[in-house]
Amino acid sequence: MAIVTTETSLLRLLQLSSVSLPVGGYAFSQGMEFAIDKGWVKNKANVSDWVGLQIQQSVARVDLPVLRLCMDAAQQGDTARLWELNDLALACRETKELRLNDTAMGEALSRLLRSLTIDTPFERTDDISFVVLFALAAVHWNLSFDIAALGFSWSWLENQIAAATKLVPLGQTQAQELLGELQGDIQHAIALSLTVEEDRIGAGLPAIAIASAQHETQYSRLFRS
Image 1 (cartoon, one colour):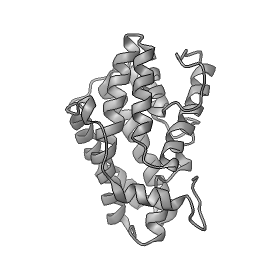
Image 2 (tube, rainbow, N blue to C red):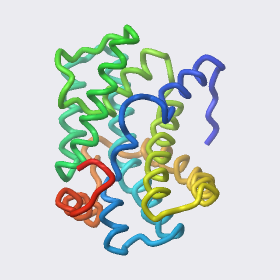
Image 3 (cartoon, one colour):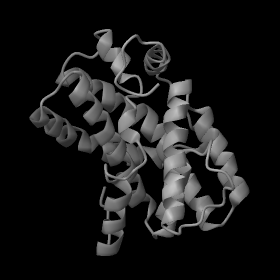
């Protein structure tokens, strides 16, 4: 997949997908902490399988299709449609923790966008999906869907590998190797997301949901629940 960008859009992409963006994505493991505690994930190869499967079966089939539809709605100024897609995104979060992950990051991004004088059509900042607000920022900065999807996916991947680096634990070299190995999965996920129709949006990863739900009552936790 060839992605073409200008210098300006590249800089905006880097800003929006940077780990230094103050939205708190680093605070959530999305069930990985429980999976590691229970021995489901033990090493670099397990992390690659765990994260790679989520890219293909969740990011590609929920987040990226919703991102694409939200960008279309934002370009048309259709606030009602954005609310509808926001409800869809949150309905796809199978546990309180996964929903909190999405809405807490959304609330932080909403505050940030307002501080950057980027208007959003939402009167309140809570219960707004991070994906929806990411789409609004991407449209404001004239990013194409492919570019926005690349940044969104890369940011998600970096946060997951950072969590694995702390929890498995992995060395920094292994973490970089994983980031390199999983880059191809991101490109495939973006291409796959273009084929997912709205009534087909959804993920089926029961082990992730179980891990996330169990993490809410895990005795000792580094990550938010």
